[in-house]
Amino acid sequence: MNFEPIAHIRTDFPSKFGIPRQSSLVPSLRARIVMEPQFRSREAFTALEGCTHIWLLWVFSETLGRDWTPTVRPPRLGGNRRVGVFATRSPFRPNPIGLSAVQLERIEFDPALGPVLHVCGADLMDGTPILDIKPYLAYADSIPSARVEYLSQAGEPQLEVVFCAAAEAELSAEEKDILCSVLERDPRPSFQDDPDRIYGMAFRDRNIRFRVAGGVLTVLSASADFSL
Image: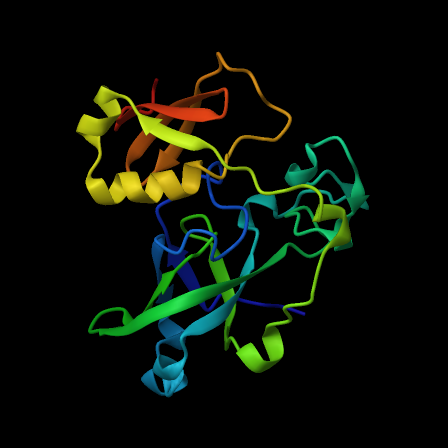
């Protein structure tokens, strides 16, 4: 089986740290899906504009060629409990394929790039290869009674996010709103809880520096200097 990417996605995250751990958790995150030249047929997108949500099948390109293990440590479990890889969405899998449901905001027919899909809520790193696009079918794909038992007691992390004066001056209101939605879910590895540690996260062309203590995440700076 040989697969080739049909497109690549352009997002606000040039590296994986800080990306929401699941799709649709942060609807304000916008991204563009740019098709490869041989897949820019306008006819291939006929009627897709009538779909509010779509599935993206994609490749964990950062883990290509890396070994997989039968068990992994999900971040939601604190990094200290192992479960089977097929019970998780870990990127370290026999075939590193990801699956995301995103909102299709609009389709732009660009003279140079062909059909460009504008989507919301993507959990992908910038440049991730897309293998396929399918419509999300609510009557078949939504199962309200579904559950993952080992996550039922884990809970969703929720932090208060504040910006110091330096960061306030460096960010627009839109950027602050997006970062609040991303950071309040705590992007740190769950086993790290050092109140003195300063973390760095790439967002657009900014180096977001923050610290977490007592349930409060403080954004310290948002400069374009990645040498800090």
